[in-house]
Image (cartoon, rainbow over all chains, first blue to last red):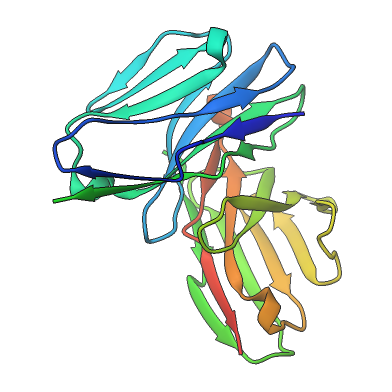
Length: 115
Length: 117
């Protein structure tokens, strides 16, 4: 069975602070994909990143960076120098199982960036 | 990037009426689309997987006759909430499997907020 745990329900930071959102996953498959999505107050889920299980390289995209560690089954997301526009709910998701395209979502972390 | 359009964004209806929600892939063909329901402050709950040209696959506990899904073309899937009741009030959001190398990426619509009076 697949499972995604986002232990942080809500986080508040002051603008310009760095913040890390945690994601821990469980799967028995050796091939799987991990995702992060952003859901701003408007409701739409915005795709941020996909990472496959064979690629443990960390990735940086502007102020966003992701740390994938198979040894701890974690795929954490860091926002550097946070901005008010980063305020949203962030979901970590897992896709695993041969031929499956269904995502397993975590419960989400609500990030509030205070000006 | 792949764009998914969902319409309407917000609908209010009377109890007992039916509501149709459309999900379109605008710049790509989507053989598979997904319908989710999201309660306030909760995660997304998969309702069904919609495959073009075939019957949808519903998740356990989701009433097929209540939530009718039609995926008649490669760019359009519809969800019809039949005989809606107040307990059907929720946020419904669709997604589509991306094209090419992005086939295991789901691109989401903006969601539909349904309020049943």
